[in-house]
Amino acid sequence: MLARLDARGIALVIFAIVAATLAGAWTSQMLGYAPCELCLKQRYAYYLGLPLALAAWFATPANRRGARFLFALIALAFVANAVLAAYHTGVEFKWWPGPADCTGAYQGAGNVADFMKQLQQTRVVRCDEVSLRIFGFSLANANIFISAALAALASLAAGHVMRQG
Image 1 (cartoon, rainbow, N blue to C red):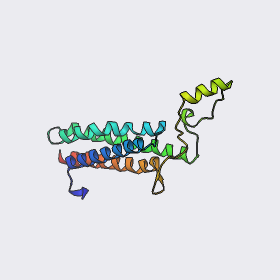
Image 2: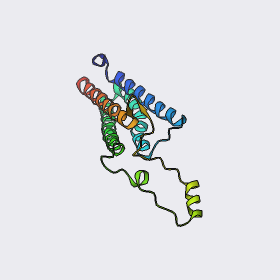
Image 3: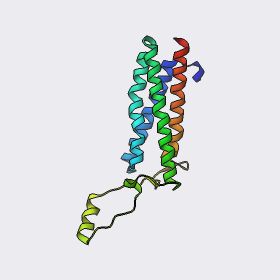
Image 4: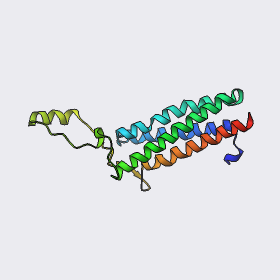
């Protein structure tokens, strides 16, 4: 099917996948699964990819060079995101330590009043604990594959644009 899609069609596919992934992330958050700091950072590529895919769709017929650049940016963003998701997966499996602000040890309060104050002010979602698994995969695990697929699609579209123009 993808062989029959031109660059504009691939831009729409990328847009749809990015929008659906963000909708899924927001829905899980509304259902009470709070994202950790690494989860939130992994959304940056999606926030960037959505307008870039739309811009690539508009640019493709008129500005092939610009479209090629936009698809390259999308590919780069999602390659970086796949690497970040792989890092997060390693943190979840405790293969390596994660960022101190979401995996670090608890710093005790000096007295009970300070402890109670910390409890009321602090809500840390740990990066090294999986809060939701779907078919055995954490969302970070799934994001490796989704991001890699989006990077591949964007690279394919950039190749289509180069061959056409």
